[in-house]
Length: 359
Ligand code: ADP
Image (cartoon, rainbow, N blue to C red; front, side, top):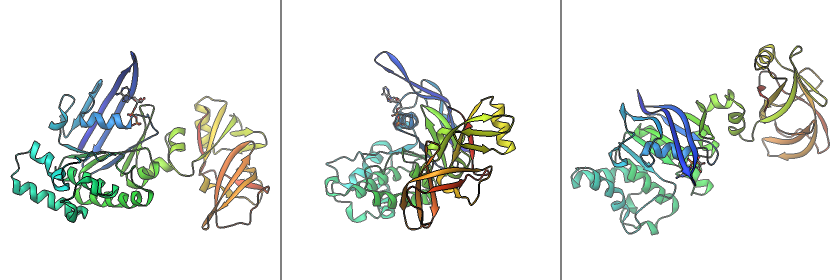
């Protein structure tokens, strides 16, 4: 059963009399207990997508459903959701306990005893029991974030919404909180929609990720699906670090060969067939840095490269290379004793190469 559904949802803002399409024809179904991450670059429509679910924006077209109920016209307080914001949004003059209980007192008919019980259970789960009497100004960023989470948990909502909740934390704490949030999710089993611009966060936290660009859904899949089988060049370039390399090649349909100064790359029959059917005389070859191999001899799947920079990282080395005028990054295990200025032969294994429509 889907807990949240975006059904052909479009949101158009007006800015100085001009329409701004923030989200276009969006279809996503979030399953019960699923952790779904909305990810994409700044301005791609992530926050708007979340705010439409929260009721903080109204839908221009389409339907948003929570459970089986259409919520398009429901006020935020009538939706069975709880939202955690990037800036925590705590009341500065209330204690932690009051911050956590306030929403419940306002919106539910729970007894004081029940509210007290929920707040203390959540505080225990988050390890902030000893902070309950403090005010937000006496808390660290990480502690504030826990209080914000606690305030969401006590509401026992059907869906958690999180808008870049970790982006104000330092790098170490962010990594720790990633794990904690996942554990919390496991424990609570509540559908969660989580917004981030950080692909690492998306890859490590999401059961599935929805990659957005320019208000449009590019791919909806597990992190590994998006990594290994990117739907298009945008997803291929956005997911994975360091980023996938791209080479623009002209394409000889008869031979199935992609070429640019000095490179003749032979695609597999299957790839060649797909490029042919797209009808283009050109193709973009994509290969991830970790999939590039050093080759002993030239072959139909090798290219020549000049070494520009070597970055030894211990377990692996990053090579920044010039391949026929295009900068290519390769990561190779260990330290091969490769030096700046070396001429290399690289293999782009054909089962790892992606062929995208030329731009
Ligand atoms: P993201 O969260 O991915 O950074 P947003 O959802 O905030 O993206 O914004 C998507 C697009 O909608 C952007 O072009 C942004 O400028 C526009 N937008 C967002 N909110 C408004 C608004 N209230 N008025 C006009 N344009 C808006």
